[in-house]
Image (cartoon, rainbow, N blue to C red; front, side, top):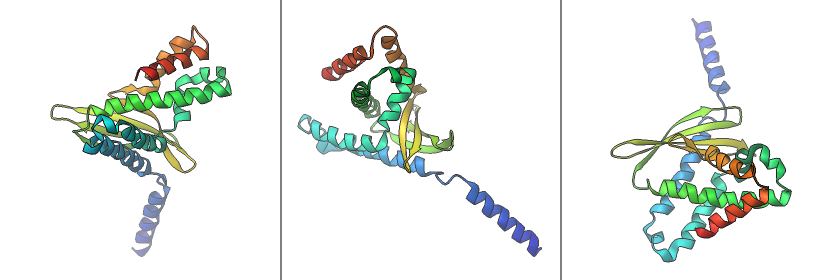
Length: 198
C-alpha cells in the first residue's frame, strides 16, 4: 500500500512539473495590460479634450509593454518584409505601431462599459499561446483573442483577433494589395497620410 501511495505521489509530482512553466502567465499578463487600457479609457479625468495627449501618452506606455511591434510588423508584411530597407523597416514599425494603437483603442473604446472576462490560454507552440477573452454585453458576448509570444522572458501580443477577425490578417491583405503594385515607399506614404488624418 505504501509503495502504491509513493508511486501515485511520484506520478502526480511528475504531471505537475511537466506542465509548461508559463501556464497562466501569458493570460495574467494580457489581463493586466487590458485592464490598464480600460482604466485609462474609463478615467473621467481623461475624458475632456484637453486631456487627450495625456491619455494617449498613458496608453502608449501600456501598448509598449503589451505589443511586440516588430513581430506584428513582420507577420503582417510576411515575405514583403525583406523588400524593405533597414530605414524603411524602422519607419514602418513606428507608423504601424501608431495605426495599431488607434485601431485597438477604437475597438476597445466601444466596449468600455461592459464586463471583460479572460477565461482560457491555449498553447500554440513552446513560445506562443492564444489567450482568450470575451466582452459580455447585455445582449451578446464578443470574443477577443490575444496571440502572444515569449521573448526574453516576457509575453507580448503579436496579433489580436476581434470577433474572429485577425488584425494581422486584415492589414496583411490591405498592405499586400499596395505592395503588389507599388514599392515599399508607397505603403509608407499611405500610412503617413492615414495617421495625419487622425
